[in-house]
Image (cartoon, rainbow, N blue to C red; front, side):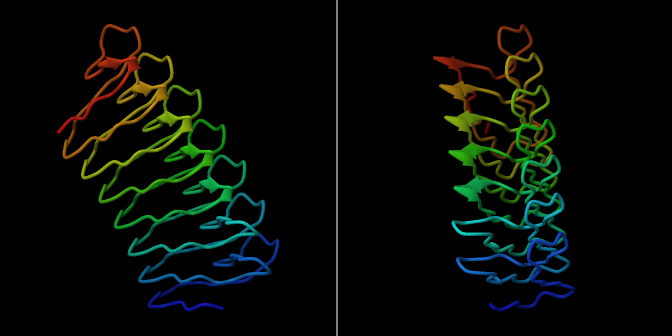
Length: 224
């Protein structure tokens, strides 16, 4: 059992194959509790094959709980093949990445579902980092027309949105309303830096595209 430090209201349970476990990852043999640091009201659940798990990635053997640092009210869910997962990438299996200083950031990983947020895949699904981006919604929807920040490199790789309040960056495949949806090989989402309220559209063969150059196919450039 590891250490839980400065975590008021933190519930740390070890329940095997039960849907209400909190902070119950396993490294190798059975369950190894990781550390939750300075995260008030953070709920970190480990539920095997259940749809309501929070912070339940797996690295290698079973589930390994990663660290949530300085992220008040951040909900990080891991749901296998369920449409409401939050922060549920997979590397090998599922590996929960870190959400840093991102209040109210919702980062969802839904496999083949149309409402996923921040659900790229590298090999399988690897959740990238959202840094200092309050209220940024970054969606990854496979072959769906409403995806936000859903590029693909090989498959889908979520890039970083940095210091861009209220920036909507959409990636829609062959749809006319995409925002920031370039393709390099396939689709590669570029970076929007320090551009409040910037709307950058990429529409394939449509007459209203904004900031939609093409290099090979379509490559979204940077807006500074």
